[in-house]
Amino acid sequence: MSRRRRVWVQRAALYLAVALVCLWVLAPFTWLVISSLSTRVDLTSVPLQWLPDKPNLEHYRSIFLGGPGSTSVHRSLRRGALNSLVVATGATFLALAAGSLAAYAVTRLRFRLRGPFLATLLVTQLLPPVVLIIPMYVIFRSLRLLDTVWALMLADLAIILPLIVWILKGYFEGVPEGLEEQARIDGCTRAGALFRVVLPLSAPGLAAGGMFAFIVAWNEFFTAFIFSSTLQSKTLSVIVSEFSSKVGIDYVAMSTAGVLTSIPPVLLALLFQRYIIRGLTAGAVKG
Image (cartoon, rainbow, N blue to C red; front, side):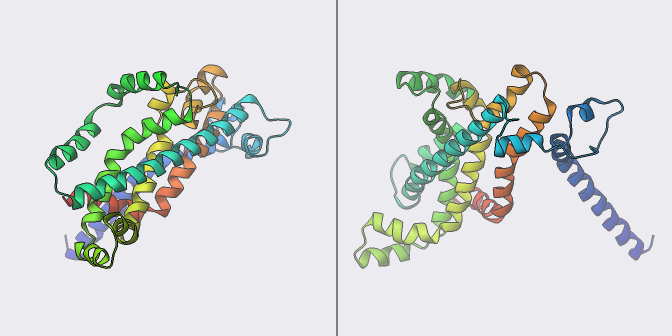
């Protein structure tokens, strides 16, 4: 085989592999979107009708605009979306606030338990979530926080915070200590140097950590399923799981909810993918 033909074969094999990976990743989501635009008859017909004759936007209209056709399913989806937004946003801000202080301490300060503290943060990520559920359930029940968005925020914070500390630690290590020393010579306290020098220079890391925290909190299902029992605190992920038991198997409503649930994390991942990759890489390589 000539060199030119061998290069052509290798390039064709590479494109074929990329196409297969894209098909493997995008096919389920594509089918989810098609199902949300179909009718129940289209989805249950034999043989299967892959594309609907006319897009069915009834569920989308009822969810966003309400009106006479709006049912309890649509109202629960709107309330679930609001709860998910509140929980994910609150957990993100709490994780960034606490994670910035903790990451700065382990980066700049030298204390005896620094190594065990960082190792503990890693170990907590290796534990299955079910290990944390029982103690958190007891604590939240004693504080009367069960079935509230506050309980979900704090539960998500326990999962997200160790990762945020490691992500920000990698960024803070990249900020020259000389800049902080100059700021302190000019009269800044250590806290002032943190807020006026370190955090502004670590803005990409904060963006990456924030987006990562929001996506994890938005997709979290297990703690939300355990700690919420009414629409007062149920998130979208919990509500979607109930469609097959409370309203029968409504494939169209389930698909519509799945599409709406996936939109925020997908958009954030696409918009901030560069920061997320840099943040995860910095946290993995440094330190």
